[in-house]
Image (cartoon, rainbow, N blue to C red; front, side, top):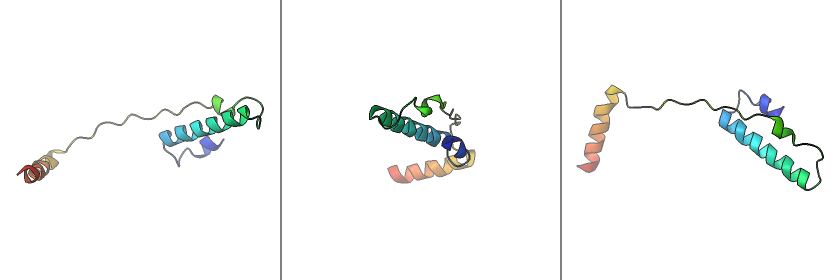
Length: 74
C-alpha cells in the first residue's frame, strides 16, 4: 500500500496525516456514490509516534545564554 511505500521517506506524523487524508477521500467518494464497498483506509492502523526526550541547555551553553539575556535586559 502507499503508506507502507513511504515508510523510510515520511515521519510517523506525516504518514498519519496521509492516512487521514486517504480516509476522508474514500469517505467522500462513498457518500457521493463514486466508490462502493468499505473504506480501505479504515483497516490501516495509525502509526505510533516515538516520544522525544526534552532538550535542555548543555553546561557550556548556560553562560552564553545568561550573557545573551543580560544584554537584552541591560
